[in-house]
Amino acid sequence: MPNVKSQFDRYELLVALLKTKHTKKELLEKYFDNGFEVHWRTLNNDITYLKDEGAEIHTPNRTDPYYYFENEYIPEGSSFTDEDVETLQQSIQILSNTIGFKTGLELKEILLKSKFLKYHFNKKEKPIISFEKQSITNLTKHLDNLYNTVANKDCLKINYTPNSSEIPVDYIISPYYLKEYRNRWYLLGLKNCDHFLMNLALDRINKISPADNEQYIENESFDFDQMYKFVVGVTIPMNSKPQIIKAIVSKVSANYIKSKPFIDNQEIIEEHQDGSILIQFTAYENYELVQSILSYGSAIKIIEPQSLKDKLFKTYQEAIRQYKS
Image 1 (spheres, rainbow, N blue to C red):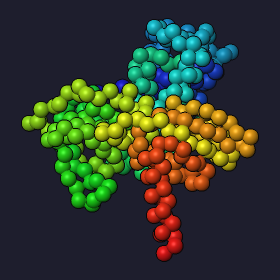
Image 2: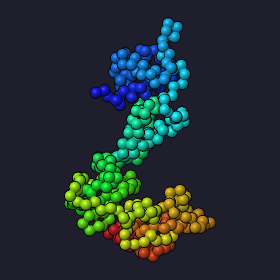
Image 3: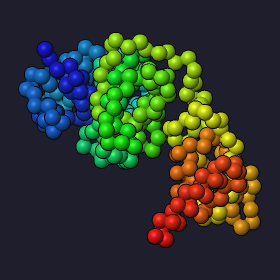
């Protein structure tokens, strides 16, 4: 059975090459440079295929010994402009860098098989965009699988090592939602035994297997898109409500917090002559919010609520004791 992907990759390459003039020898050399070690008969077949698809390709002769498109070639059924193709190429390059998902490669293959052959990806092209990456061994092997189980509403048995312990435990989970925060992915789902909403870091999952004998519990209680409008990070405190939080940010961090707010609903209430600002936002008081505020050190002062001030005060007291000892 022929390698369909390689075949369509060759067509893609040939379309790009025929936009300029090449001899048959040069075309074969370009094939070789791009990883296609083929006989000249294969090249002839590829040219014939494009002609059958409507391409007008110059046939070499004594006075003009080159292959090239005599007129612009747009595959039948393709309505993409050059600008569309450029946008698609950029999008696929970005998607290909998304950890865990194979969307970029799959989208490229779909386009190739759909005869959208106007574009060409130069495999030797230097990247012009960089993504923050971490060790993705466990992440890669779980993310695609979990995405499918959430979509298919499959009950799972998950072997997991909590942060607070090095002892793995098994959970029966009805998975509902995948959430990314600071380059880590989390699964949110209901623990079947007590209906407790859990969030599990994917890089601490040891094994996932189907829980075929367990009943999947439908999500009838959680609107995650709505809930995460008031969450910094991942943790949703189920027994509390979002709080209105006010804070003074000193001049040294004011511009940074303006451009990178704690949460989307953050507002600037006042701008002071000394360069400091008063901000306000609504959010749950969770671990991630506290850690985000602590990262600014003395550059931020919480005005309200008192409960958040008390948490931060206790943390700073403990830090001072540690440094004094």
